[in-house]
Image (cartoon, rainbow, N blue to C red; front, side, top):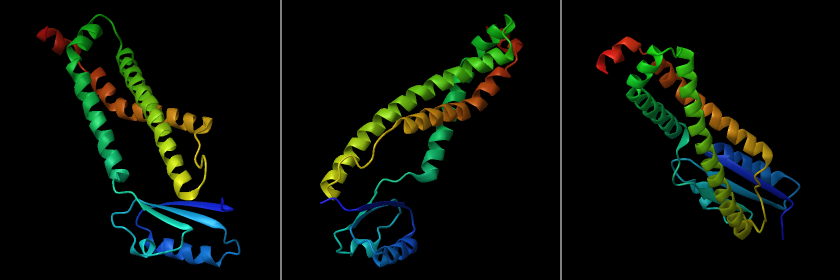
Amino acid sequence: MTPAVSIITPTFNRQALLQAQHVHLLAQSEQDFEWLILDDGPEPSAYFQGLSDPRIRYHRNERRMGVAGNTRIALNLTGLLLSKFLARAPEIGVRRALGARRIDVFLQHIVECELVAVVGGAIGVALSLGGLAVVNKWAHTLAQRDNLIQFDATMLGVAVGLSLLAGLVAGVYPAWRVCRTAPAMHLKLQ
């Protein structure tokens, strides 16, 4: 039987808040509910692991990344782009000597970063769809709910927008740095 209310709570180190939410949830008049708690904290919640209420399902994510992990990935990407662009500095020096403007060189590298971001975004969307299928299958077995989470056009737009923003943020400094290269320095080396 499908419950009248489904609550999904993602959390990170908020055990006191979750316990207060549990008290308030039990005080509600509607008791036909299911509560899925997705914990990303460093330690499992002894409070929720010890509950025997079948309406409350506690799931702890063992492999969390958080803000620090995502920042590390972004800085790594910026470093890789910088080294790739600086390795092409002699070619850029020749192009600049032949008349290419700094803005042309800058835009070429930004477009390259955006293409990489779009490909990464497409891979991310494909992985998301696979992940949603797994989560929906898990929700079907755990909560007897079909298609609990769906992917729509708004989510696709946000994914593409975030991919383009990430490509722009990661590519601005390396592109700016390489377009500041003096052509004379690299022409001497050629």
